[in-house]
Image (cartoon, rainbow, N blue to C red; front, side, top):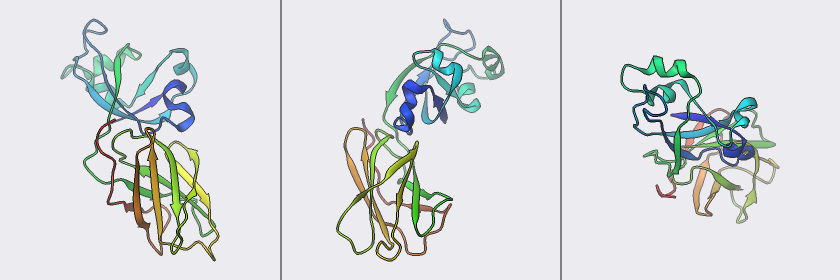
Length: 197
């Protein structure tokens, strides 16, 4: 399940991918179940969301999961409610996936990472092109999208990607982006971070 967060959570994209456990209880709203759900921060909620020190703008599905069974509609009518929250490790039970951004071409490469365990958010993504021994830092475009300029005559696929988490753990997906890669396609990394913060 996903959520947007205000500036305090999204941090100009640095907080993208972080996981939180959230719940509400009956003292906050009689329709709340008190059962926690885990949500992944995927976007920024602008405007009035920033009137609160911390604000989660939960997806409709996630918001409904906070309710007692059969009372989802009543909780939705409340709109804005106080919740309890804490940061938790992300656990997707699968490998990290990379989706090549639709704007990528032989001179510009951008990629989105999905299903990142542990911290969930990334502080650095580096690329190594085929036949090279050096890593080049990519630039955060927004959220979990990272980009880099490519010299197609000297920087050829396959591309390896090295990810550094917010707590400075690293994983390396060797040759994850193959020769003949295509925009909008997903590529399985065969790696992920441990499921702990």
